Length: 113
Image 1 (cartoon, rainbow, N blue to C red):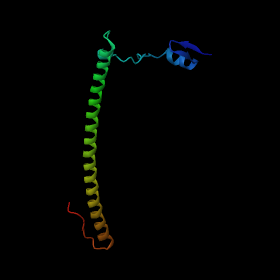
Image 2 (cartoon, one colour):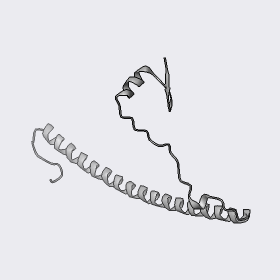
Image 3 (cartoon, rainbow, N blue to C red):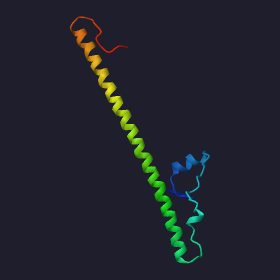
Image 4 (cartoon, rainbow, N blue to C red):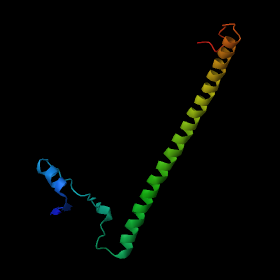
């Protein structure tokens, strides 16, 4: 049998669990409407001008975000390239150490510490 609470149907198990619980209800998501988004009683041309201005500002912000993102990608590419180079050098050093150990020389011919 189902009961209902303020949010809809509730099972018997949910009722038992809720009976001893301190249920905190979260408010619904309500986004505040910015003042610039509220149409004024001006004529349609003024409303359109405000909308276009807001759109241009949003596009400028988006362009800046894309510019920063591309710059970050460039820096990341440089870091990854440097890391790859250093890993190749380290790998070559370990290969030389391994070859020396396999040859029985025991010499450390790898990169200096």
